[in-house]
Image (cartoon, rainbow, N blue to C red; front, top):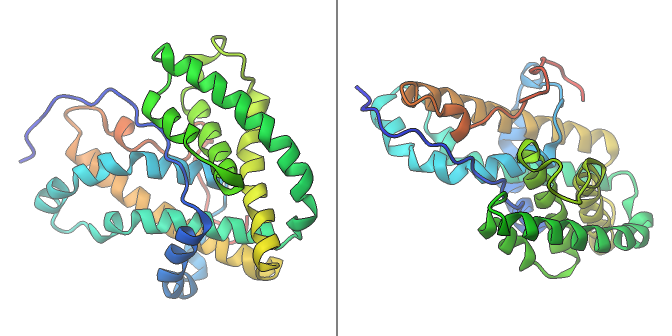
Length: 262
């Protein structure tokens, strides 16, 4: 029997995606699994992948803290899905970047940098002000501020967008940042990473192949996360905090539907 404990009330802050080399390594580790995935397991991509990845990375420490309890009380649960959750998240992130780069993103690098630089600084300044008021996680904001270079700038924008979106109901009307800026940060971050990747390594796979890999990697991530959420729901039923520990990737999106295309 699972012993009740104090409910967890603090919502985890979204995590900052890894740099492309680490994400590429994660993708390579599960490439056989990606290629072997049955087409009937593909799902419609109805969420923003960078935001979903940031969310999973943000809640991962709390999920790993529950691993011993999951292994003890849910012996038929495939705990290896939790063990590989970070790898699935980074692989989905890399597949998304490859998909973006398949469209010839190198031509957009200069204007993307021109837009990204002030956007990062403005949102970061707003985030720091909110953190001083206790409305955003100060440690997460400080980690974003520590980033340097163009790759970090791109990842910072993704992290800032996810951070603001996750807390928007608490900070709306208390910050100069707008929803349009937050949304744009989530768009421009991956685009900038893709453009930087094309500049360094040339174009990735063709659009069709890249889209297929993206859909497969995303399906693996969603499956692993959903299965882990089910385990958390059982373990934390009495505490009623499962949604805080592992919130749905589809919250406010009306669920998901099976599909083989985006």
